[in-house]
Each structure stands twice: as C-alpha cells, then as structure tokens.
Image (cartoon, rainbow, N blue to C red; front, side):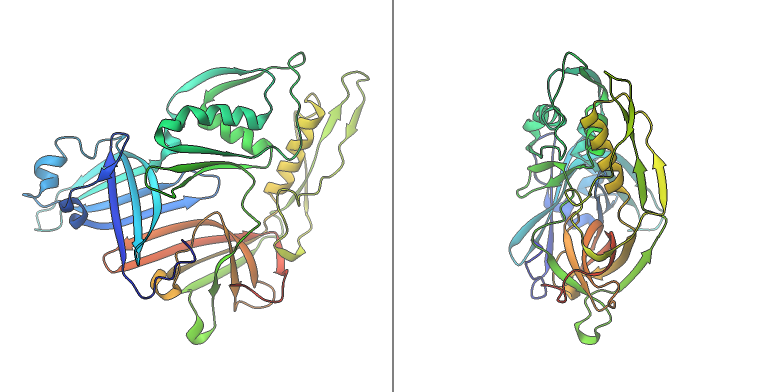
Length: 379
C-alpha cells in the first residue's frame, strides 16, 4: 500500500464491526464519524480512538448505543481506500466508551477506544507445559489458538538454536499468552506484534526480527523546497543509549564460569548507518550462569541488539502532500536532512489522524548510526 500514490484521489474510511465476524456499519455511523486516531508501534499493542457526533435523535443514541453496538470486546476493523485500493489500518476490540453530553446542539460526542487483537491473548492467565519445544515452536503453538479470528502465525526460527533438553529442563508458561510470547521474543532479540490485513478480518502475527531488510517505502523529503513532503522532522543522537552487555555462563560439569564472547548484532539488526555508534555503557546480565549456554548466548545477543539504536527521528506529514501512506515497522529513506542523518531508517511508530478532508501522520524513526550506507536514497 505504501507504493500506491494518493495525490489524485480522496481517502475514504470504512468501519466494520461485529462480535467476531465483522460487517460494514450502518451508513449513519460512518456519517457521524468526526475523527479517527490509530497508533501502531513496533513491539507494542496498537490502539485506536474514534469520535462520533451523538445527536439526541440519531440512530447511535436512540438504538445502537442502548443495544450494545459499541460494547467492550466488540470487534472493529478500520480500512482506508485510496483510488480504489484498500488498506487495513486496524483490527481490534473495543475496550471503552465515553459519552460527552453537551447543552450546545451538535457538541455531544461518543468516544470509542480500543486495542488490537493481542488483547485476546492478554485476558486469561494460564499454566502450560512445553516439553522438547524450542522458543519458536512454543510461539507457534500459542498462536494457533487464535486462528478463528483470522490470525496467521508468522514465526521465525531463533537466530541462536536452542535445542530443548527435557531431561535438564521443561519450559513452563505462567501468565497470559501475550506475556509469554513477548518474553520469548525479547529473550531472542525478536519482536511480537499483529499486522492487520491484507484483507479485512485477517491479521499476521509476527514473532521474529524487526523488518530491516527488503523494499523501502517512498522516501521522506525535508528541506527540499517544492519537493518537500514532510511537514516537520527532528533528529536526536543519544550516545548513552547503547550498551555492551556481558554475560557469564557456568559449565554444569566442571562448575567453571566463563565470560561469553560479544556477539555480532548484524543477524538481528542489519546496519542502516555507515558509522555505527560505540557502546559507552557496560552492563552484566543476571541469571545467565545457570542457563543452558545457547539460552545465555541468545539473551546476550538480544540485549546487545535492543540497545543498538541511538539515532531517533520524529516528524509529521500530510498524506496528500507526501503522496503515500507511511507504514510502521518497515524501512523508509530520508533525504534533505544533511549528510549525517540522510539514509534509511526503521519506522518505529506511526499515528494516523483522520478527519473529514484530512489525513495526517505522526511518526518516529530509528537506526544505529550516522551517515547513509549508500550515496542515493531510493525511491
């Protein structure tokens, strides 16, 4: 969708709702929509907030609200259509509703707030046993429980193989499925999130490394006169953000403790900057001595990778001016900000702000160093 230009056509928003299977909402609901805000962040749960005009004699106030149409746990899918091309921005559940009653005509509102479908995975604590299953297979077993919501597992094998040893240790889950999936991902330097689409009612559950390879989205232009497509873009370089973690491992046979070698983070975080930033901090990981060696090495790699991004950017854009919808959790190029900060970035988060006649986006970017890897930013 990021490569579909939008300059020559309006943006249409569509709402679909239902208990589990969704269908288009009545036309009166879409006509009453005042604004929509959707936020998607890497490694975190996405959320939305919709505001509706709540007229005293309208169908929302008279029938839909009393009948439970907007009740918590109702499923809601938000799509935008640009020049006939549909893109799913959100698939989740209503968790809260607020009514603001006003004495002034036309100022009463209904605000509906919700979270993505990972909320389903965070509602029930369970105790589960996973004998002889490596982390990726445990993640796959959990995600298969949610297939009836159209969630497709997108699970990647861990970078450091961790063969299970049932005779030494059996892995148990305590807590919710979401907590366990997130903890497993972090322990391997991975991320876990749901990506809505490509069709309404479908989602991809990614348990794996951040997307730092592949096709770039259309570049963000700043300080380029008539070719500028970004309203605002600010960069920051935090030299204290990166850490060099250290981990010790104890051989169970000899009881000899050794310091594990520093791993290369390239398998998890392919470089986006030409000049990577050195780590100014050193931190010793706790609890690795009695782990399996492969598990301790995976945790060391994960901690080194997570703290690698020291360069961050934040900005805003008008979708019609930029010409493309910026997508989170993918790569994008920046040009016009100078030699130090031009180049490719990982899109950490995007907030979509939609109102009648307006589609604005706020975004954050990140990478591990200064200067672009290549002389040309594409596309």
